[in-house]
Image (cartoon, rainbow, N blue to C red; front, side):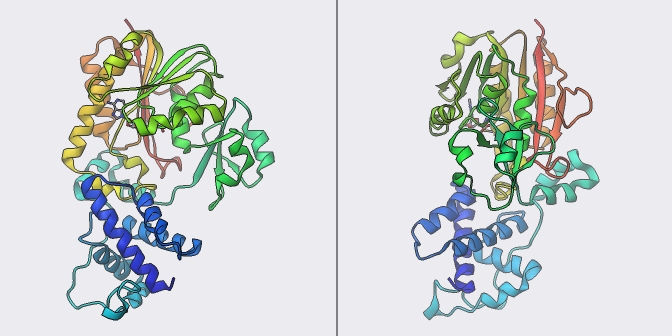
Length: 402
Ligand SMILES: C[S@@+](CC[C@H](N)C(=O)[O-])C[C@H]1O[C@@H](n2cnc3c(N)ncnc32)[C@H](O)[C@@H]1O
């Protein structure tokens, strides 16, 4: 593909990303992959170049742009003027190059995020907000977790000297840019899992021990379930639940590959979750609620999440977080713990949810836990790309006292 054809492809992908943000459609990464699945003529360099351009443009546009073309023009004018020369198409070359620029045509204005989202983040980062948001919009590294059920980090570092130990997570490995994990024998042998360092630390904060009964209430495809199973030495009972059939159905295969035998899955009916877990009332030593959230902590991977998040959607998410906390609390035994995690840095999804829960739940108190990023035990903590170099998370732990 010529540079102009790549720019045209980026515009078409951006149009699809904007539409998906409005309708709750697929993530940008998926959209780019789908775009190329029907364009076999594009080589791997073309795909990478278009994907990089699409993501650069999304990162530079805090608010949803009018169109892919307006986004690329605005991005080019502010940050990459050479791209403007690619707007060279004519009616005859349509589809192979962006049409020539027209005086006065719409162009999007670069920004970090919508003002109301920045206001929320200012409550966390104060004057450091622009720097923190720029870190949130950086490129995420590829992190792996050594599966200590069948390997360990030191052994894997000898086997794969290109990997580096992560700074905080004891079993974490950071991969060099461009590593294709599918090519690694250790991956196929179940010795490593793809998992961001922040996610590894969140699972660690649960404090799951061998022999315990542990429930991962919002397990998704089981990233944290697998880490919990490893922490438990594959001994005890681990129950992974979720309302998303597609995500949960990926888990059994992952469990088998990782050599986990203690985990079972349960599909929950949205709003009728209790029906599938009522037999576990008051039975769990540990419950993890890795709640659905705005995902502000994962903007490095999904920068278009800024375009999806509305104040209305945020209100719905916080209501769901409160509901899941109520649900999870009923599963904890007296003396057991409830760990609440969101990959968000918005205080309204984090400290505010904990305060609201504690105010209406006298049986629970904040429970100090140790985490490698803190020098002494804490009852809650945040992780962020700017501070710890991992995805953004809020993690809090509560204990049922009676
Ligand atoms: C942040 S994701 C979980 C990620 C997962 N724990 C991991 O480590 O890969 C949140 C999950 O909550 C699930 N979810 C949403 N509403 C739920 C509900 N009412 N009950 C249980 N799970 C729910 C979503 O389907 C999604 O998989």
